[in-house]
Image (tube, rainbow, N blue to C red):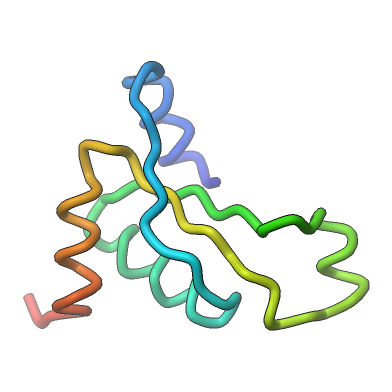
Length: 87
């Protein structure tokens, strides 16, 4: 979580976060970048694995859970369908 996400949480501390997608680490980098380009805050969690184990094992197939605020869920789902578009 970067400082923009923390700032969002401070502004809306009671907002619920929803699971957007469960994907691999390499895919999560792209999805996270896409969401951030649209000013959608993102929380990335590694399913059942601590950060230390992830670094030591270097398992790229560990599932990554991407969460977004409930109010941004529809916008994020639409972004996944359309991808990056020229602006």
